[in-house]
Length: 216
Length: 216
Image (cartoon, rainbow over all chains, first blue to last red; front, side):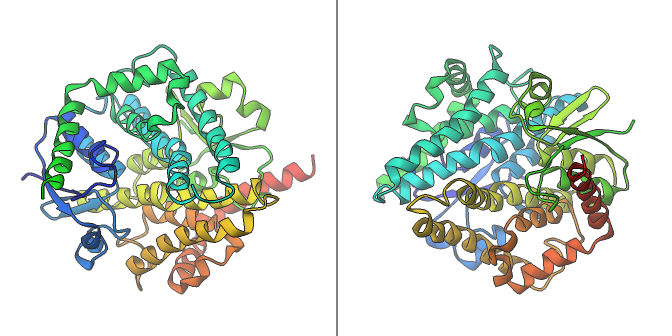
């Protein structure tokens, strides 16, 4: 059976591919697996039917037969374990790829989300200009460490894996901040991932949702 | 072979069990598996030998034979997949338990860490008192949603799992803030977890490190 994802009917990122359904679409494309999408409004996300699928009222969710799960990381790990292409066959390599998934979501992404939240909610606060450099400093520390580890490799640990997919998805959230560009190897890493045909297909699919929302 | 974890030689939490080795110790205890611990100083954590194990210069790391991984979530998932006790046998239940691991680390923990960071680094800033309620507001939203989902159940999805282990570990970081206590079912959930014999054994083991550091 074809699994169903939820995604924003009107994504706040205006089709830039930063909503978390994009990561899951990308994983499906890398795995060569079909998926269906059900679009939800913000009101629907906070309603009981959606909260039964996602207790925190967010997207994406994943439904396939009797199984319903949420959290982009959990969904991607689930499908990567069921279909070849995003996890090494060898057990130790698999454990290391999963390590990079957690590093992306638990170590790298939180200060980046803090920066985003600050940009959205504190721009008009008197402390905004003084406080942002401290947040950026924490992000820079992580980016420097990631850059050191990546060095001149194409991907974080051997071939492209779920770890790279999530790490690139997280780095993309830094958008026009210029922080990724401070490390040419990280900028090249993101560009290398974005050039993958599976990434392009996923990006176009989510962008089509944005375009459709503009005309309705 | 017995795996080796790294932990702080002198934990900044003074033995309160909030350092991230505690989660992994607890998982080992729940699984009935032995583990060794290698203590590292802050200077050692930033030195090349440790950075080779953990590119972000943190604890814990996990080494077993040829495998070396980091990130408490990745380590716990790895050992839970190899030994029975923290993941349901049934595939869908297993996917849901893993979903709660990601929810703990990726949805619940980030605003809690933001609060901690603010408490450590911004207490003397003129904006601290005005800004903290906004951070607490974001945490309260998540706690309310978690409380609604847990309702009057003992654990998040059937029996105690890795998802509960990580969720409780994250909630504990709210410590004396009083935020968890606003939801009696969440306070009882944390207390229920802390009463588990495996939790007590893990807590005592990390507390013994703190006590030893006091006398040397």
